[in-house]
Length: 88
Image (tube, rainbow, N blue to C red; front, top):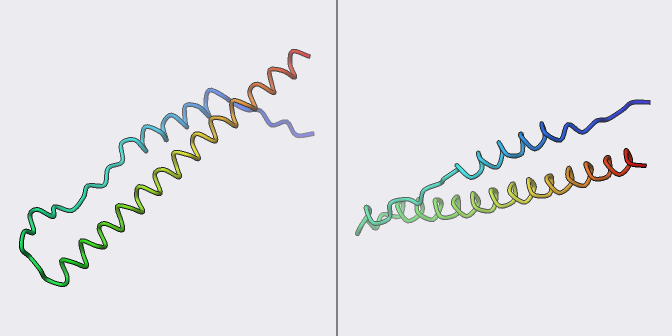
């Protein structure tokens, strides 16, 4: 029978690294004030793409954050179950 062992410290360290990396991600907004009265169609399209990209970025980072939180909850549950089995 194969034994699967949870290395809790290693997993939490990796999750903390992911969380720090996620927190350090920044996608700056385009400098709309620098464009002033530039009314080229390309500029409007570019600004719209940048707005959509920023929205996708925010959605992506929130999904990854939720996955990290879920993983924390799962490994904590596994650790508690392992401890309960050992106590029996």
